[in-house]
Length: 309
Image (cartoon, rainbow, N blue to C red; front, side):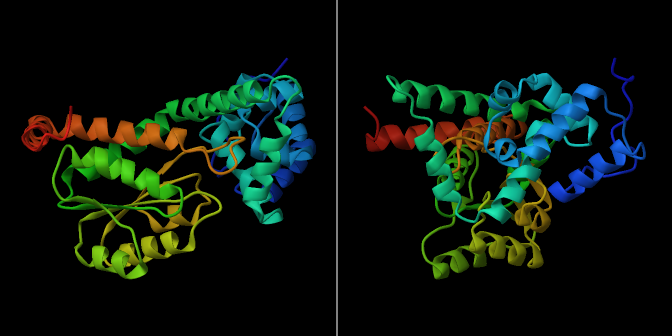
């Protein structure tokens, strides 16, 4: 029988690396750990450390199936160790794997190829992609995520100007957020193009304006550099990234952590788009009648120019 619930790692931060997690297991085995875990939780943690690639790449549902331990057990274990949830716990394994295996896209493609099954490759792919998207979105349901989204939406609604910046496939996330927010208020843009174009866009911003940056492992160096420079210049930097170990998290005043675990050949963006939609709708509530007036003004221009049929 498991011991009664105890506060998660009282006075101690959740292990930030796989090495620190392994050290915690050693202390627990010696009876000197900072938290009490039952036999089932200790077994689960030992399995995770024995198969770090599984817990970096699999969704919580897939990990539960492969290792015969329920998803709820993994979630409870993660929170008991001081993480916000399974996605936060999983980020430790993802960071470790990224350090060990720099060829991210080849690894993801290998995983996608391995999903093929006789007589139904497309069915297997669709089922795996749908389940990983569900798991990533479900991880957003924690109270911590709601607080992060509320704080960021307040910044997006109140700032004089807002710019969004992401490169490679994360440019689409920056563009999506910029478009949605631009429906509700003026002075919203997405930075892009050459380095000079990005510099010129940043030059239009002043202290107190908001820059939203987005990148996930493997991180794009220029996005990190822009985030650091923007904060030094007095901009309010908001990061949409994957976990606390992200270099964007250290550069930002506000961060929202979004899981992107998937069998997709690159990073999955489904949960990021849900976060963008939540930010835009929360900002709409904060802006109230001003948001409605901005949308109505846009609709008048759409009608006058005959853009829609």
